Length: 396
Image (cartoon, rainbow, N blue to C red; front, side, top):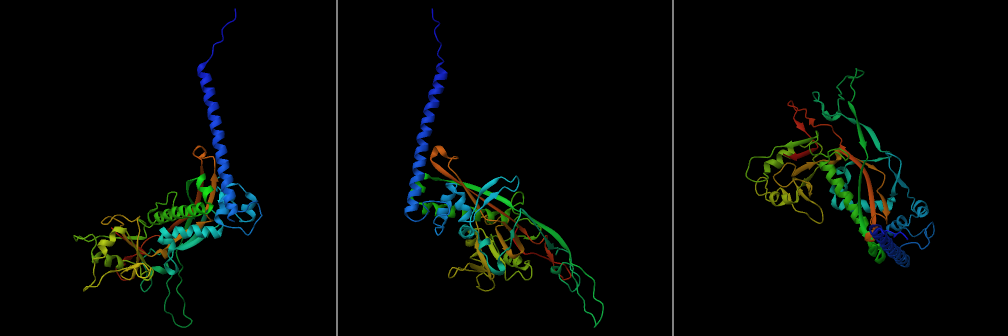
């Protein structure tokens, strides 16, 4: 008599499910590949991308073709046509995304300045910006926090001259230096773009990603330069030793004219021609009613695209300032005393695997930067009382 075979229905169900899942994934893979092919065909037809890849069609150089080369893993084109190299992880040396070429990186930074007025500042008002050839950069900085000698300024960091006769001896002094170290911090993010979008318009994809990535970087830089705690990110001015908090008046209004005058008075000599106001956007309805003297407005509205002005200094509404009536809702800042270290360009990588089942391409960006105030404290005036002044003033 033959022993009946016992059938494991659970195991059969698992095998059937696996077969269905495998067939489903194969079908999705076919659709993804078809969308990629269609995307490349349309990009080639419009002259946006090279049909051959590699070093062919070297005159075709644009952000859309660059993104397509990343997606195709066309290292030859990326390295020889776009002169782009892999961004290495400086901790363990592993590969990252491809560095965005300078001409496209400028576009990303242009979108960054749309949302970040700090990076948009030019001339003497702009922060001091240094390129970082390695992850760490150490530079000497003057220590300007000591009380100045009679007839001298703390700005000279201890260097004191003296009046002397012909052939007379000179006073022996030397400046006080301190090391200031920048460490490139990594800010990274990603977004997903459907393969339908890529297939329909490579130009739209390039514009979308450049704006999204550029503005994300701009917002991150703005927030960290203002409020960063220095832990894995730049060190902002809020709460820094070189920032002077002015105590708000006791009047019934959110802002009083005396508050603004007190802030202006504590600004470091020499900074008045460079300083800018940063305020919460909702502060405008309160500040716009303030007057100085007899019927003279403190705030002058924007004209011909130039920013509004308050006490002669440009005025910028910034969403990362506190709500009106709270600490750090209004600040008067000389950004030339802020140091920014930019580490190479932004890098971009693509993956068709991260969002495989949703038929999307995942695009990742990495941006490296550090920043911190140049002074290490407030500066003392040589006025007999050694009154404190600073390049960064905010309302407490």
